[in-house]
Amino acid sequence: MINLLRKEILIQRKSFFFAASYSLFLLVVFNNPGYDLMAYVIGITAIAIVFCMNATSLDERNKSSVIWRSLPIRHEDIVRSKYLSVFLYVIFGAVAMGASGILLQLTPLSGIRYIQIHDLILAIIFTMLAMSIYYPIIFRFTNQTFRYAGMAIFLIFFFFPNFFGGLILSRLHVNENDVSGWPEIVQTLVGTPFISLLIIATLATTAFYYVSYKLSVRFNKRLEL
Image 1 (cartoon, rainbow, N blue to C red):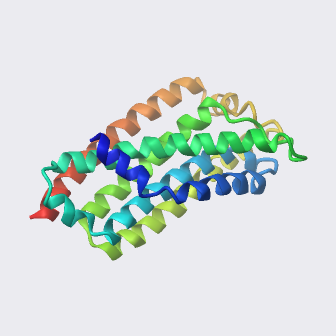
Image 2: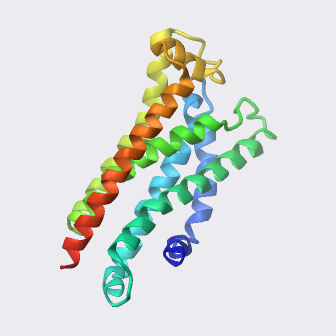
């Protein structure tokens, strides 16, 4: 399992520079009132999704499935490595975005806020939801199908976090410059403590992620027959 996870990282060494550059680009682009509400969430989610899909694309290009069949590796381990690597990519995305935020604080773009813990949690939730849909598709259908599905999933989960943040602001007519306290904004909107909402969303997403994992294992076994 450790070797499979290591493989997921090593095959994308050239992509790490892209992630660092992309994080700077996103923070600069979203350095506007209202948009920076979800800038870190969007950036981390986008980086993680791109890494996950790129790893799958590289596996297909290198015919990795043929190699797996010749090695004493269980189907569950192959699928599990994909699902666990998601968290590695999220962590790297958070480090890249957080470091970019600190770096940009030293420039005239000092209005950019620092990354916060709820940014990471929301990014994990959005990325898990995206991959819960994506992985069963690629383990069930053909190459062309998963490419189209991957693009659609990326676009949906790239724009949804910002739409989510903008909807909250518009519903409450709050000052868009005061985005640092947006957890309290959510709490006011739904009448439930923000931490409670995060716990509920995390538990529900984890359950959905587990069901998705089980489906992917089943599809992968059928694919190998």
